[in-house]
Amino acid sequence: MKEERVTCECGHVNKTGTDMCAACGKPLTEEAKTEGVNMRYEGAAIRSKKQKRTILDRIWAFFSSVKVGIWLIVILLVASAVGTLFPQENLRPGLEEAATFYEREYGSLGLLYYNLGLNELYSSWWYITLIIMLAVSIIVASFDRGIPLYKALKAQRVTRHPHFMTRQRLFATTEATQVASADLEKVKQNLIKKRYKVREENGNLLAEKNRFARWGPYVNHVGLILFLAGCLMRYLPGMYVDATMWVREGERAPVPEASEYLVENRGFSISYYDEEDERFQESFEQGNSVVTESFETDAVLYKRSGILGDDSIEQVKEKNILVNDPLQFDSFSLYQTDFRENELHEMTFTLEHKESAETFGELTINLINPEADYDLGDGYAVRLVNYFPNFYMNSNNEPSTLNNIPDNPYFIFEMTTPETPEGETSVVGIQQNLEPLEDNEYKMTFVDVDLANVSILTVRKDETLPMLIAGGSIFIIGLVQGSYWAHRRIWIQQTNDKIWVAGHTNRNWMSFQKEMNESLQDTNVNTPIDQEELKDSESSNDDSGKRGDKHA
Image 1: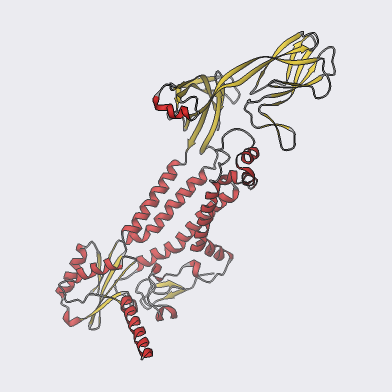
Image 2 (image 1 turned 120 degrees about the vertical axis):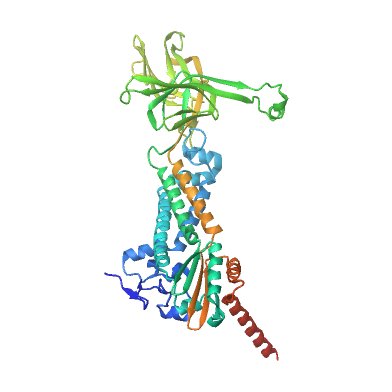
């Protein structure tokens, strides 16, 4: 359906619903004729304000609503605040199960926090949906109001309708016989000195400056949209990485989100302050047995030269990684953030006959990546049925593990020998050797343990940072643009035997009125008065008179 138009007597074509002609300011609606001029968006018709004809119009009106935008911001702020009550999933310490961690650390409230999914709030579908809705709201509101405002300001003429002139807040009239052409020329030059851009038409004058200030809010919107886009980009694969990797001495580990790269820990070193150092006596007195001076990892970075899993790798870089001195490659940075000293790495057992104490070979279990079967030869074999790196009994009174860190390893072995071909079951832990099914002939005996230092590195990558910086910078520019300047316009118009002077600004009226008075100074043109203050004064006097009459 073709949109209806209204043609003003000045010849300018306006959209239906426009309060006043964008070119001359003539009122086009009955409401506009009886009320003051609508200078907000220059009285232009706003799509979201028109009668809702289609579903698209209703959707447009919903997203362009300032109330909807404010509510979306409030909901996002409240949700973001709730997300900071407890650590998010990617920031919580340890490797134990999430439910166990939140319940152990924060009780029933922490468990509720986990069950509601708030531990992964910032990556939840509804939180991302709110961000997208806010971005759409900002975009729609900008187009809904910005385009009509731009067209109206572009179409404005110098000569304006009498209704437009007389209904301006700052207005004054002067007898034309009292004003010489030299006075008008002097006013014009004064305005130019004050950096007004002056246009003339048929002896009338329009002085305007700082129109760009009207676009401050829309520049803000551009900055916000870029910032929100940067936030959403963090959820795209490869755009943002903030992960943790553990590398034990002598081992290589793939870099999270960049598995073609491997990091080898050639050695981890740590130094402590002297307990006799007076600077740290307070810390020692508080029960801290050691105070770390520094710790670092002698790291080597490799890159696979073939397909994933190919043994062909090449060394890329070698560096000692210290705190705040990362190993950098491509767009990644590896930071030294933590460590674990003397962590259990391997445990060695032997299969022993209980009565004779005869042993039948040894098996060494890697506590990080254990094998399932161990052949000891001559018909003797051990199978690792189950393994709990950090053993505990859960709420269902079942064996489980808090995390994958071998702080309290427990093993369930099945031992097969020529005398017991059906196998025997043994549960082995630190200083524990249980036989849950029956008395066994054989047992697993602890022989030795191998310890290793673990370097804990944080992997960082942020391709969204330029977008976030650009969005924030543009937002600040828009804020300054709309806060430190004001759009000011002054009309001087000859009507019959009168000289009319009118002025409008979007803010800072007192400063604007002072500027107008200075521009008209030393001329015969009367300075404008504030018609709103005059109305308020008259209203106050009328109310005082009525109260006086009533009192009398």
